[in-house]
Image (tube, rainbow, N blue to C red; front, side):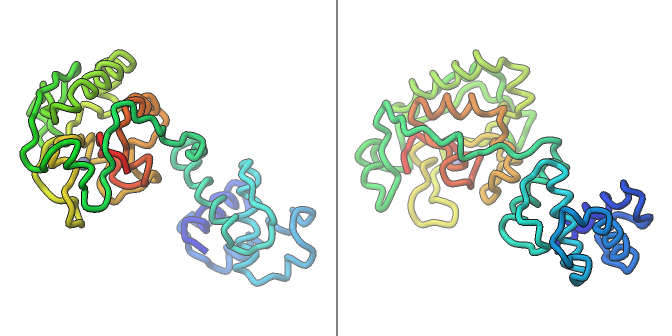
Length: 274
Ligand SMILES: [Zn+2]
Protein backbone atom coordinates (compact mmCIF):
# COMPACT_ATOMS: atom_id res chain seq x y z
CA UNK A 1 0.00 0.00 0.00
CA UNK A 2 1.34 3.37 -0.96
CA UNK A 3 2.65 5.49 1.89
CA UNK A 4 0.45 8.37 0.79
CA UNK A 5 -2.60 6.10 0.97
CA UNK A 6 -1.64 5.18 4.53
CA UNK A 7 -1.36 8.86 5.49
CA UNK A 8 -4.81 9.47 3.97
CA UNK A 9 -6.25 6.63 6.06
CA UNK A 10 -4.42 7.95 9.12
CA UNK A 11 -5.91 11.40 8.62
CA UNK A 12 -9.34 9.83 8.27
CA UNK A 13 -8.86 7.87 11.50
CA UNK A 14 -7.66 10.97 13.34
CA UNK A 15 -10.74 12.82 12.15
CA UNK A 16 -12.91 10.00 13.48
CA UNK A 17 -11.14 10.12 16.86
CA UNK A 18 -9.78 6.59 16.46
CA UNK A 19 -6.08 7.36 16.04
CA UNK A 20 -3.77 9.73 17.90
CA UNK A 21 -0.54 9.12 16.05
CA UNK A 22 0.91 11.30 13.29
CA UNK A 23 -0.30 10.99 9.69
CA UNK A 24 3.18 9.89 8.61
CA UNK A 25 2.49 6.82 6.50
CA UNK A 26 3.97 4.43 9.05
CA UNK A 27 2.06 1.20 9.60
CA UNK A 28 2.06 0.44 13.33
CA UNK A 29 0.02 -1.78 15.65
CA UNK A 30 -1.89 1.32 16.77
CA UNK A 31 -2.75 2.05 13.15
CA UNK A 32 -3.91 -1.52 12.55
CA UNK A 33 -6.08 -1.40 15.66
CA UNK A 34 -7.64 1.91 14.59
CA UNK A 35 -8.40 0.51 11.13
CA UNK A 36 -10.10 -2.47 12.71
CA UNK A 37 -12.18 -0.20 14.94
CA UNK A 38 -13.25 1.90 11.96
CA UNK A 39 -14.24 -1.17 9.95
CA UNK A 40 -16.12 -2.64 12.89
CA UNK A 41 -18.38 0.41 12.79
CA UNK A 42 -19.00 -0.01 9.05
CA UNK A 43 -19.56 -3.74 8.68
CA UNK A 44 -22.63 -3.24 6.49
CA UNK A 45 -20.38 -1.73 3.79
CA UNK A 46 -17.68 -4.39 3.70
CA UNK A 47 -17.62 -8.08 2.77
CA UNK A 48 -18.62 -10.69 5.32
CA UNK A 49 -15.62 -11.82 7.31
CA UNK A 50 -13.59 -8.74 6.39
CA UNK A 51 -12.69 -8.06 10.01
CA UNK A 52 -10.63 -11.25 9.82
CA UNK A 53 -8.68 -10.17 6.73
CA UNK A 54 -4.93 -9.53 7.13
CA UNK A 55 -4.13 -6.00 8.39
CA UNK A 56 -2.90 -4.75 5.02
CA UNK A 57 -6.08 -5.80 3.26
CA UNK A 58 -8.16 -4.19 6.01
CA UNK A 59 -6.27 -0.92 5.54
CA UNK A 60 -7.01 -1.00 1.81
CA UNK A 61 -10.67 -1.71 2.58
CA UNK A 62 -10.83 1.39 4.73
CA UNK A 63 -9.02 3.38 2.06
CA UNK A 64 -11.69 2.29 -0.44
CA UNK A 65 -14.40 3.48 1.97
CA UNK A 66 -12.63 6.83 2.35
CA UNK A 67 -12.73 7.20 -1.45
CA UNK A 68 -16.44 6.42 -1.51
CA UNK A 69 -17.04 8.93 1.30
CA UNK A 70 -15.57 11.57 -1.02
CA UNK A 71 -17.85 10.53 -3.88
CA UNK A 72 -15.09 8.71 -5.78
CA UNK A 73 -16.25 5.35 -7.15
CA UNK A 74 -14.19 2.47 -5.82
CA UNK A 75 -16.16 -0.74 -6.38
CA UNK A 76 -15.94 -3.44 -5.37
CA UNK A 77 -14.89 -2.60 -1.81
CA UNK A 78 -12.82 -5.76 -1.40
CA UNK A 79 -9.49 -4.76 0.12
CA UNK A 80 -7.52 -5.43 -3.07
CA UNK A 81 -5.41 -2.70 -4.67
CA UNK A 82 -6.27 -3.14 -8.35
CA UNK A 83 -6.69 -0.67 -11.22
CA UNK A 84 -10.01 0.67 -9.89
CA UNK A 85 -8.48 1.49 -6.52
CA UNK A 86 -5.41 2.97 -8.19
CA UNK A 87 -7.63 5.25 -10.29
CA UNK A 88 -9.62 6.21 -7.19
CA UNK A 89 -6.35 6.92 -5.38
CA UNK A 90 -5.16 9.20 -8.21
CA UNK A 91 -8.45 11.09 -8.10
CA UNK A 92 -8.46 11.41 -4.33
CA UNK A 93 -4.88 12.71 -4.27
CA UNK A 94 -5.80 15.30 -6.90
CA UNK A 95 -8.82 16.30 -4.82
CA UNK A 96 -6.72 16.66 -1.67
CA UNK A 97 -3.89 18.53 -3.40
CA UNK A 98 -5.92 20.79 -5.68
CA UNK A 99 -9.36 20.98 -4.08
CA UNK A 100 -11.07 19.47 -7.09
CA UNK A 101 -11.23 16.21 -8.99
CA UNK A 102 -9.11 15.96 -12.13
CA UNK A 103 -11.16 16.83 -15.15
CA UNK A 104 -12.10 14.16 -17.68
CA UNK A 105 -9.43 15.15 -20.18
CA UNK A 106 -10.53 12.63 -22.77
CA UNK A 107 -13.63 14.75 -23.28
CA UNK A 108 -11.55 17.52 -24.87
CA UNK A 109 -9.74 15.85 -27.73
CA UNK A 110 -7.31 17.90 -29.81
CA UNK A 111 -8.91 19.25 -32.98
CA UNK A 112 -8.28 17.72 -36.40
CA UNK A 113 -8.56 21.10 -38.12
CA UNK A 114 -5.69 21.92 -40.47
CA UNK A 115 -6.93 24.88 -42.52
CA UNK A 116 -3.48 25.85 -43.85
CA UNK A 117 -2.39 22.33 -44.71
CA UNK A 118 0.55 22.19 -42.32
CA UNK A 119 2.72 19.20 -43.32
CA UNK A 120 3.21 16.10 -41.24
CA UNK A 121 6.44 15.84 -39.29
CA UNK A 122 7.00 12.12 -39.71
CA UNK A 123 9.52 9.65 -41.05
CA UNK A 124 12.32 11.23 -43.06
CA UNK A 125 10.60 14.64 -42.81
CA UNK A 126 10.18 14.87 -46.60
CA UNK A 127 6.80 16.56 -46.17
CA UNK A 128 8.38 19.19 -43.90
CA UNK A 129 11.14 19.92 -46.46
CA UNK A 130 8.66 20.05 -49.32
CA UNK A 131 6.46 22.55 -47.53
CA UNK A 132 8.93 24.64 -45.51
CA UNK A 133 12.22 24.10 -47.35
CA UNK A 134 15.42 22.77 -45.79
CA UNK A 135 15.80 22.98 -41.99
CA UNK A 136 18.36 25.26 -40.40
CA UNK A 137 17.92 28.49 -42.34
CA UNK A 138 14.19 29.21 -42.73
CA UNK A 139 12.92 32.52 -44.12
CA UNK A 140 12.04 34.46 -40.96
CA UNK A 141 9.21 36.92 -40.47
CA UNK A 142 8.98 38.84 -37.22
CA UNK A 143 5.51 38.80 -35.63
CA UNK A 144 4.75 41.41 -33.02
CA UNK A 145 3.43 39.99 -29.73
CA UNK A 146 0.46 41.97 -28.42
CA UNK A 147 1.40 41.41 -24.78
CA UNK A 148 4.68 41.70 -22.95
CA UNK A 149 6.76 38.56 -23.23
CA UNK A 150 9.87 37.80 -21.27
CA UNK A 151 12.53 35.21 -21.90
CA UNK A 152 11.74 32.24 -19.68
CA UNK A 153 15.38 31.77 -18.69
CA UNK A 154 16.14 35.47 -18.28
CA UNK A 155 12.98 37.21 -17.17
CA UNK A 156 14.53 40.67 -17.27
CA UNK A 157 14.83 40.29 -21.05
CA UNK A 158 11.67 41.47 -22.81
CA UNK A 159 10.58 39.96 -26.10
CA UNK A 160 8.50 42.13 -28.42
CA UNK A 161 8.51 39.95 -31.55
CA UNK A 162 8.66 36.27 -32.37
CA UNK A 163 10.78 35.42 -35.39
CA UNK A 164 9.05 32.52 -37.15
CA UNK A 165 8.95 30.90 -40.60
CA UNK A 166 7.30 33.30 -43.08
CA UNK A 167 4.74 30.67 -44.01
CA UNK A 168 3.32 30.53 -40.47
CA UNK A 169 3.60 34.22 -39.60
CA UNK A 170 0.03 35.25 -40.50
CA UNK A 171 -1.37 32.27 -38.63
CA UNK A 172 0.78 32.97 -35.56
CA UNK A 173 -0.35 36.58 -35.62
CA UNK A 174 -4.02 35.52 -35.62
CA UNK A 175 -3.49 33.16 -32.66
CA UNK A 176 -1.68 35.83 -30.65
CA UNK A 177 -4.34 38.45 -31.36
CA UNK A 178 -7.13 36.05 -30.48
CA UNK A 179 -5.71 34.90 -27.15
CA UNK A 180 -4.75 38.44 -26.20
CA UNK A 181 -8.30 39.63 -26.89
CA UNK A 182 -9.67 36.78 -24.82
CA UNK A 183 -7.40 36.76 -21.77
CA UNK A 184 -5.95 40.26 -21.63
CA UNK A 185 -2.49 41.23 -20.43
CA UNK A 186 -2.99 40.59 -16.71
CA UNK A 187 -4.48 37.14 -17.12
CA UNK A 188 -1.83 36.10 -19.65
CA UNK A 189 0.82 37.05 -17.11
CA UNK A 190 -1.02 35.18 -14.36
CA UNK A 191 -1.16 32.10 -16.59
CA UNK A 192 2.59 32.49 -17.21
CA UNK A 193 1.93 32.83 -20.93
CA UNK A 194 4.27 35.80 -20.86
CA UNK A 195 7.18 33.36 -20.50
CA UNK A 196 8.66 32.69 -23.92
CA UNK A 197 10.78 29.59 -24.39
CA UNK A 198 11.94 30.21 -27.97
CA UNK A 199 10.97 29.56 -31.58
CA UNK A 200 13.85 29.16 -34.06
CA UNK A 201 16.58 26.79 -32.96
CA UNK A 202 18.84 24.98 -35.39
CA UNK A 203 18.90 21.63 -33.70
CA UNK A 204 17.77 18.02 -33.81
CA UNK A 205 14.88 16.69 -31.74
CA UNK A 206 15.87 16.08 -28.15
CA UNK A 207 16.66 12.43 -27.84
CA UNK A 208 16.23 11.94 -31.59
CA UNK A 209 18.12 12.06 -34.87
CA UNK A 210 15.61 13.97 -37.03
CA UNK A 211 15.29 17.74 -37.10
CA UNK A 212 13.31 19.56 -34.47
CA UNK A 213 10.40 21.57 -35.85
CA UNK A 214 12.24 24.49 -34.19
CA UNK A 215 14.84 24.15 -36.97
CA UNK A 216 12.16 25.42 -39.39
CA UNK A 217 10.99 28.06 -36.90
CA UNK A 218 7.50 26.60 -36.91
CA UNK A 219 7.41 25.66 -33.22
CA UNK A 220 7.16 27.79 -30.10
CA UNK A 221 7.81 26.88 -26.48
CA UNK A 222 5.86 28.45 -23.61
CA UNK A 223 6.67 28.45 -19.91
CA UNK A 224 9.27 25.66 -20.15
CA UNK A 225 9.97 25.75 -16.42
CA UNK A 226 6.52 24.45 -15.51
CA UNK A 227 6.20 22.24 -18.59
CA UNK A 228 9.48 20.38 -19.11
CA UNK A 229 9.87 17.78 -21.82
CA UNK A 230 9.19 14.70 -19.75
CA UNK A 231 6.28 15.93 -17.64
CA UNK A 232 2.78 14.56 -18.32
CA UNK A 233 -0.59 16.17 -17.70
CA UNK A 234 -0.45 15.19 -14.04
CA UNK A 235 2.27 17.80 -13.54
CA UNK A 236 2.42 20.15 -16.54
CA UNK A 237 0.75 23.47 -15.81
CA UNK A 238 -0.43 24.01 -19.39
CA UNK A 239 -2.99 21.23 -19.08
CA UNK A 240 -5.21 23.16 -16.65
CA UNK A 241 -8.75 24.12 -17.80
CA UNK A 242 -7.73 27.79 -17.78
CA UNK A 243 -5.71 27.06 -20.92
CA UNK A 244 -8.59 25.57 -22.92
CA UNK A 245 -9.09 28.75 -24.94
CA UNK A 246 -5.37 29.02 -25.50
CA UNK A 247 -5.10 25.54 -27.01
CA UNK A 248 -8.31 25.84 -28.99
CA UNK A 249 -6.97 29.02 -30.57
CA UNK A 250 -3.82 27.21 -31.78
CA UNK A 251 -5.72 24.13 -32.88
CA UNK A 252 -8.23 26.16 -34.89
CA UNK A 253 -5.20 27.25 -36.97
CA UNK A 254 -3.98 23.67 -37.31
CA UNK A 255 -1.13 23.97 -34.80
CA UNK A 256 -0.43 20.89 -32.69
CA UNK A 257 0.28 20.75 -28.97
CA UNK A 258 2.53 17.78 -28.21
CA UNK A 259 1.11 17.88 -24.70
CA UNK A 260 -2.48 17.58 -25.77
CA UNK A 261 -1.74 15.05 -28.50
CA UNK A 262 1.05 12.98 -26.97
CA UNK A 263 1.13 14.02 -23.31
CA UNK A 264 4.76 15.15 -23.20
CA UNK A 265 6.61 18.39 -23.98
CA UNK A 266 3.62 20.49 -22.92
CA UNK A 267 5.60 23.71 -23.52
CA UNK A 268 5.69 23.02 -27.26
CA UNK A 269 3.22 23.93 -30.01
CA UNK A 270 4.02 23.49 -33.72
CA UNK A 271 2.68 24.20 -37.19
CA UNK A 272 3.26 20.59 -38.18
CA UNK A 273 1.06 17.56 -37.89
CA UNK A 274 1.88 14.27 -36.23
ZN1 LIG B 1 9.67 23.01 -28.47
